[in-house]
Length: 394
Image (cartoon, rainbow, N blue to C red; front, top):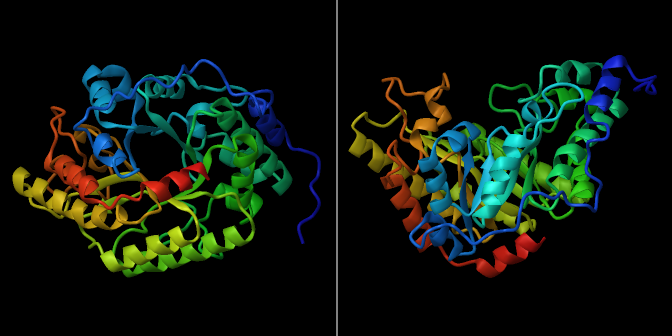
């Protein structure tokens, strides 16, 4: 039996101080982001091809590139209808120290999006990673009540700041363990949130977001559920069980996000993937592809051959996901090859040391075979605009 909570610890009080007085009052949207401008994307863009089928195409925008490279901003404005920050809305950026908040970089990307008629996703509220150094020790000493109070203050701070501006928030991110992780009951990954609050932390996060910004679609964003490995099929089963249980409890979840960091070392099982997406859609949930890229380490070094194989791999995946009526958005994790995280990841980088060609645009911002494959897949996809519009309205 859990003992009743005692008086707040010093660290718990610091947690309150970190967020106290910072949350925007519910019901009052913050000012200063500007009106939604005229769409900036070109008639031959990926967004133009996507929107014809009731979809949005967009990308993750890293602030260092956005801030320093005009050609990058031009490419994002030309191609995209929805954007997401990589780190600028995560806790490590927004709450770097107790009592201090940093919104400037996220605000700048949001203003850019609004000026260009683009929508914005929020990433991410509750994750086991990207925590400021002072938060994990704080949660480790907090009672469940104190941890929930910290979670509430955090979500009210960041989602309140952006209230009315974000179409969907990744409320929880990567909450299930992968093949090598111990099973924590229901497959939940070990995390400071689980240790502090128990498995109910997931439901609480969704409820707090809904209270803070009811218009934002609460999303569970998960990795490694797209391909044909047996352990991924087992993980898909866990996802479906969790979603069914959440729906039965009345949790205000509206979307499921597939990160879609695809790896060329694992095949795409189209039948398994199609069944998985269909079951999610039958629950009344929207689906988003949130972080799409292709790890090309299994493909030859020759660039034309490699580009063709990446494009073919993408087609096998996109042909399935774009046929699902519940699919709403497709976002790549950046748009520009030189920025891909894959080059620096110890398990993802190519064995020959060459830079990966994982994204739609090359180092000169030219459209690659992957870009053309994506455009062709959007154009060939069935038109489920009516279903998608209904899901967006919630």
